[in-house]
Length: 319
Image (cartoon, rainbow, N blue to C red; front, side, top):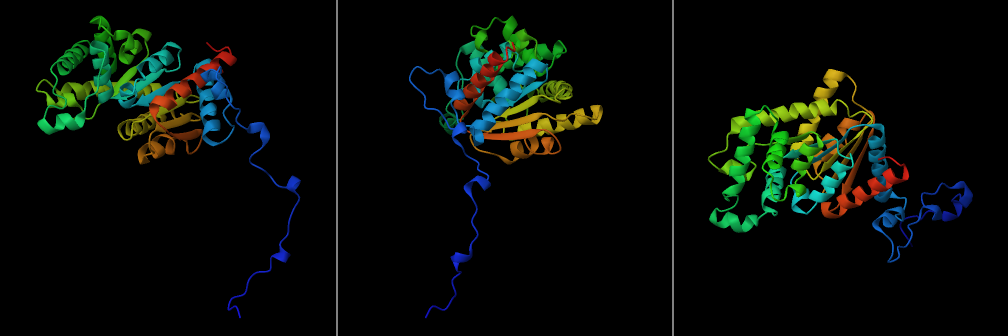
C-alpha cells in the first residue's frame, strides 16, 4: 500500500489554444542564409527574439539618435584596439555615429602604438617573468611628449594626444582612433587610473599632469552627458573605470541641468560584471530609458552592431 496520496489529474481545467498567449510564432522566425547573402542580409534574417531582437533595437536607437542629432557616447577599455576594431570605430566616427568617445589610459597607449608602429600588444606573461613587460623605450617617450604638449597648450588628454599624432604625421595615423577624433572634431576623453598603465613604470611619468588633464577630460565628458537625453550611451568592455566615471558624470549633469533622462544604455562584454550592469545599464535608466546587456567577443559583436546601425541609416536615408 502506497503511503502518500497522489493528486488526481482528471480535475485539471484546460483551455483552447486560441485563448492562450504565445511568445513564439512563425512571423518571427530566423531565415536561412545563402552563400550570396551579405552581412546586411544576415542581420535582417535574425530571429525577432531575445538578444537578436535587442541588438537590432539598439541599432535602431543609435540610427535614430544620429538622425535626431542626439548624443551617442561610446565608452571603452583597450580591448577593442587589441582585437582589431580600430577601423570599425573610425568608420563609425566618420559616419557621425560616435559623438563622444571616452576611454581609459590603456586605450590611448595601444592607439598611440598603432599610429606610430602599426602594431601593439605584447605577451604579458612572458615579459612579467624577466621584468620587461611595458618597458619599451619609444611608447612612453612619445606619450610624455604628447602629454606635455597638451598641458602647455591647455588641451585635455584625449584632444592633446590626438593632435600630437596628427601633427607628427604618424606613419599609420589613418588607423588611429584618437587621430580620427581630433580631425573629425569630436571630443575624446581619457580617464586614467594612476598605476594601471605601463607608462606609469617609467621615470618620465608625471602623475600631476596626467591627473590634471584627465580631470579636464572628465569635465568635458560631463558636458557631453548633459545632452544625453534621447540619446545612447554604450560601454564596450570596461569593467570598472568607465562605468564609475560615467556614474559620476551623469550625477554632475543631472545636478546642473536637472534632467538627463530617457536614454538607451548598452553594455557589451565577454562576461558580465557588476559595475557595468549596475552603473551603466541599471541605475541610470531605472526611472526612464532602457538598458541592455550583451555577452560576446568584441571582435564579433561590435562589427555586427556597426553594420546593423548602418543598415538602419540606409533604410531611413539618415546620413
